[in-house]
Image (cartoon, rainbow, N blue to C red; front, top):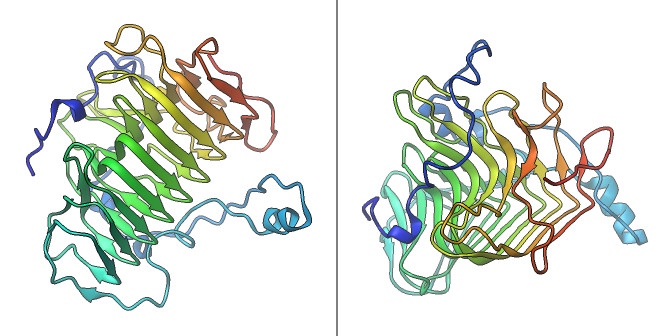
Length: 330
């Protein structure tokens, strides 16, 4: 499928507020993420063993609190012990199917989902594309998605569920049009090539509804390059092609990038965009923001563009990691 699949899923507008190269001129040793690292599987990277307690109100909840760790190499992607076989099926899936324990990266440049009822589990995959206007659906479970050098989402489209998935590479880890659920997954190591001006994000929507991000580690990791390419946010919601509505961002870890990201979250209110003046039912609750080296998460702060007066919008229980002070929304 060509990059120009649909204008609805085009790249973010150049008006997105990002860190300029001039603003970061004083920051030393800015590094461009190598493409090889962006596409490397979890086994090639060290595990992150950072623990965080989850909310609990019952005895069972107290047990979960003691055992909770944020998604990382040890609890996302293909589980240890799974024996993968080379995938021999079609790269374009046109009927409901379940695919298990395969490595599809040698056969397919992308998995194009063109059917409802597709499930892929315990597998290593190239980028996954479900952009055919909303008639397809796919569930990804305990898998690694390697976006490589693709210039949009490693996971991209409509009606997508990702559980315990590690996503690396591509311009964005997850680009949602509508109806997406990302649960207990690790989004990081996006592709930002030298000489290009990519706007990277861990999760982005340019308009749509029906989105849930819960219990994830969300990290936009590239640094600003010499041509002003780099991170926009860990999570970006922009009303470019449709209004943003009914998005729940609950109990996620927003990873700091104090030298390469503008804000850790762009929360949907962008009145200069065609559909950015009235985001509704945006719920941002019980998330944890890393402070980073500048104590702000991003260069300018943790969050921007949250409209408190919007219908159904809620900002509550969001705190800084470590000291647990409240994170206020702008």
